[in-house]
Length: 296
Image 1 (cartoon, one colour):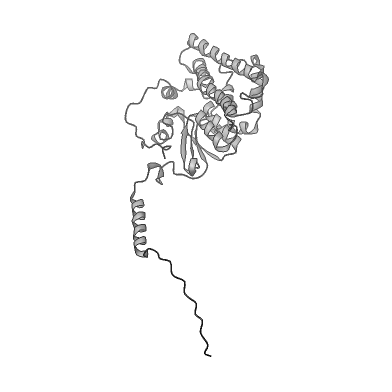
Image 2: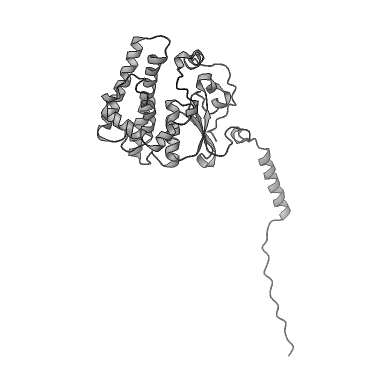
């Protein structure tokens, strides 16, 4: 009987679209994408298009130190970008694209939301952002976070501005105005009293150590210039020493130490006085790029 050769029945081939039309469609899509205009912040030459540590635009003031302390507390790598506010560098077009209020501090975080760079100005907003980013010193629990927010805004809207005015009229103003000196010295005294009462039965302003303490500590360190006697506020004094003893606070408080001149007085620097005080709106067209780094 003749042998029958077994044959394997070939499997039917799956039908697919012709290769050439697919390749042409892909090429058209790639070309269209390459020709599309890129956002300003996506260009290689743009200040936000950078990789590496957080950039801290900074001068060693009470507001600037809030952020260097927070960065040290969180263990985040950062790079100081000095902005000499006594010589008007805060009006540089590049800086204004980051901080349109021409004030320090400001940051650029290359690793912002979605892995994209983000620029942030205003010290309170920066503290909250860093707290959310790291999950440190800013609780995710709504009740506890609200407690912290109250004291952050208390500092931003009260202690900072009032202490700043006390500093100015007590030491920097070209003329001594008794009413202004008394007005702001007394208000700072009242605010220190508020802190002293809040700290009577707790170690920190919002219960646990938080960004609220970092915000207020930097301003409190100038209590002598503000015309206050720290001995009048024992709970406040204990808090001040407690926060100041933290290693990260000590490191953050020394950020930009090389920029400080211990003999410098703004009131005796006519250039700085002209730049920092008596400012009015600049109505001329801004030389900046006009982009919004956060609208991406």
